[in-house]
Image 1 (cartoon, one colour):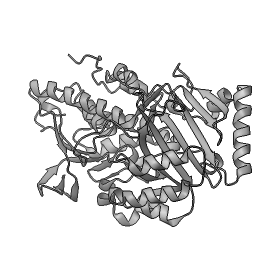
Image 2: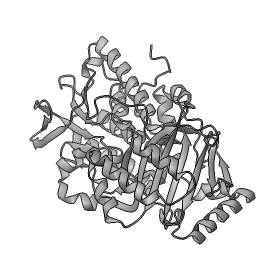
Image 3: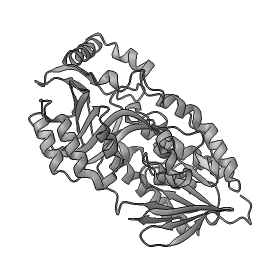
Image 4: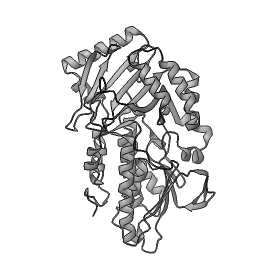
Length: 439
């Protein structure tokens, strides 16, 4: 950046994983503090919650967390999941695949399993710490705005004009980054809502996430995965505290109501819960307990399992990162790694092209496209092959898992079909690398 150029004024929409990671990295550039970007992070939730679904961090994601000095804190906050067990209606274990603690093999349970909310909190706190240091050194740092969202976005010349929905405040930014997830409001405003059906590719799978009290008689450090006819499945997983169990209820179906409910947002929670109850009330196993706790919980989240595919992740001075631009779906095992890698590469591109957003976005896409293409390439037949239609199909699935378990072939299989996180490059952009203790 030229000495007489003002620092970039950047708005990041979303304070989950990609958003605060991007902000932190932008402030870790070798530029003097007064020349570092002025960053605003906008988050629609009034505060970050330390819960949510289980996510894993693999390969390049681990490398980036290490560069941020976050790896010890992340490891200390993991769920402690020992692996995954395939169980039947009688809770008999057909197969048990332990986690790979070396971090070198992409087994179903990664070396690092953590609740999304916990990881988001750690990323946010690190961004706060770095921001405070930059402010002490004379820079602008990060401005956090919680409980707010955009309701207008217009590009005028070299600025993006936005309006905050609740306050009505209008502001102008040099760059707007959409880091607001699969249902990105930024993407809809910048690219047009009419194209969402083409950009967001449904996979025919719908899921509900929530947590419930742990029952010591059955819940353990193992993930238990139960399948039922009708392409339905329930996962029960440890949350790391020993007090709660996290739940993922998934159904693969062409029921149009499931798809409609996925677009209703938080306002449709009761409808979403009723749909999940209807689809799971006859599956047996521990479904009675699961449904009862689902109806009572206040941390329920429901969505379609989908991928986001776009010809370009930028439009003018608006750019997307993470799930907002290239969601690979939870079944890819790559969501968190893509969020961290995307933030890393976008920060690097903006550092090296501070006065030319178009060039920065082109460099960012060139770095990320091969990784995204590989991450979005799912095993043929997914998610249907892991969610059989008939009772016979469920038996066959469990039998196949039994053979893989007894033969040890699972370790060979995951090398070919496991998440490709270890193949994701991490370039050297010259960012300062942090220790666990920022001071």
